[in-house]
Length: 217
Image 1 (spheres, helix red, strand yellow):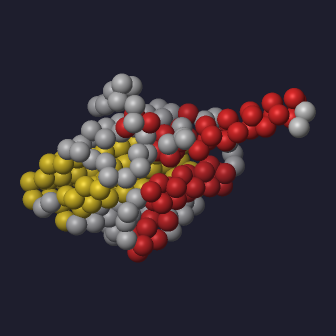
Image 2: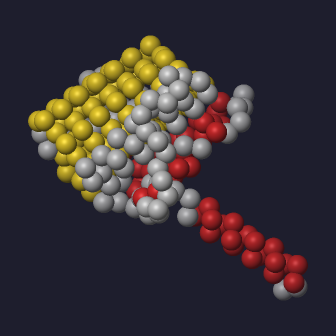
């Protein structure tokens, strides 16, 4: 192998290694930062691929995994400013700021700001901030809620939680957590399972997490 080919091979190996060590949660949270495109199918494909990668890491029943993998957004809602929506169904929401939704079902929701959902069912929520849900599982199956901040839910049924800064659930029915050290409930119990980390901060504690709370509206 000549020097040029050897150099190209080394670069390829380094790039491939870097790609392999990228954390799937962080990768999904880069979607709001990427430039907008008219090709909605492309961004939907990226989001679905990221969700599949995350589900492969979680020890969940095949029936639950299949239900979440079947989420097939038909359109994309994208916004860089604080966003408030009445109803989201079978959609991909990519928000670069705080997000409030009254009713959300069968959707993939990715946000860099804080997320508040009043009624939620069978969603995948990935957030770099805090998540607050009034009722999850009230509109069908429970959701997968992944947060770099804290997750707070009043009534959670069959919900899966991954919250670096802990979870507080008033009423927890068949709720399961992953890599969530702090779990507080008023009623019910939450088992926690350790899995491979979804975020770089989990293995690099010297790196500060993004500030949580309401930022920008």
